[in-house]
Image (cartoon, rainbow, N blue to C red; front, side, top):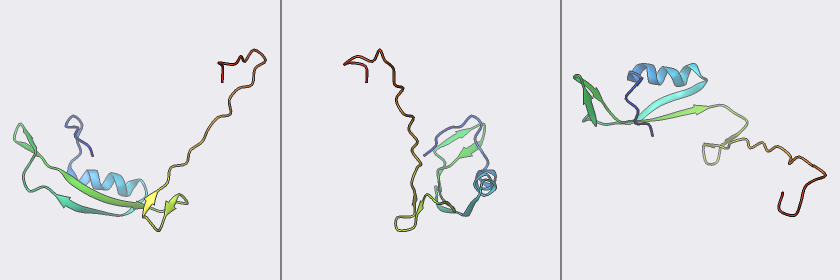
Length: 85
């Protein structure tokens, strides 16, 4: 969900941003008929978008992307006490 007005995209540019970053297909699932906010006669509407990106992290059973989690090993020091790690 996004609710930012400052720097908001036009709908066509919003969808293009997904496509330009490797998402395909990109489609609108729902678009609000009524604006949730109007500023200087510019209407802001809620849009629900589905975008799929081919990835090795893609779970085809759930259609969700699984984040890669990288952890850094804890530094080993000689002064590490019982409350250190």
